[in-house]
Image (cartoon, rainbow, N blue to C red; front, side):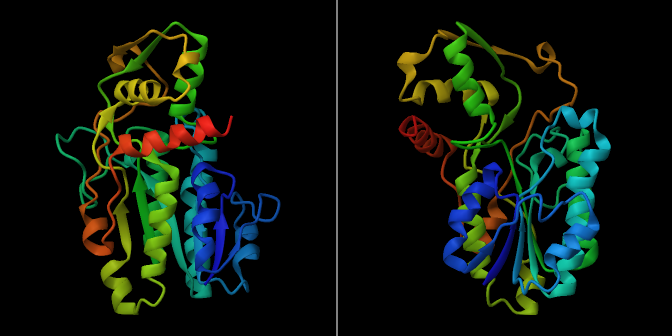
Length: 297
């Protein structure tokens, strides 16, 4: 395969560079070569490249900042995926794109399935949903993976922030009424590579039956407080922690510019049914990531 990877420096993009390598030639341009904020730049980077796949791991992910920068979020999260899908259709390539649990409002008592009604609460969620719809409207071959609470050993994420704050403060307060599944960026990349390999020889009928939106998240569920507490308990360097207490608080005590869904749990049965893939429990992955973090210092 010949794969165009966009967003190589992000949490998921960094892992994709390694996980996609066995599939063939990976072309991973930087922002200077491919600027997602301009349709002409997207077209110039894709056309004539002979790509079998376009994998878009780039996005505007600053959830709170998006409330003040809705246009910037819209261009990267909604317009750019549509442009990429149009170019994929023109070039006879398939597109992989990543979306979010934040397309739901979190009012359901159950984990969300792919066909549940969407109702984003914030600009980030609305722009990510718009990106999904833009891709689908082109009728390009595509796989869209909705994931949740992404973290890893590098980049900016909740786990790394908690580890840092625990070394700086004696007490932490963390929201305990929002539920979801922390999902390791490497697992997302590995599932992506396996799904792409499965679809490498797919017929148009296969794409009609197997293409589309899938939920991709770790097994199990917890709250942000549970995620923080487990991160500190499993940290191999916990002797460096100053924090002796992680105090749970309700969302109402931690107001933020962007509203968050209280239930971000995703039902990933379709991913298992169609591709035979299921992610391990979030705590198992967390222990691996923390070992990686400790080993890198």
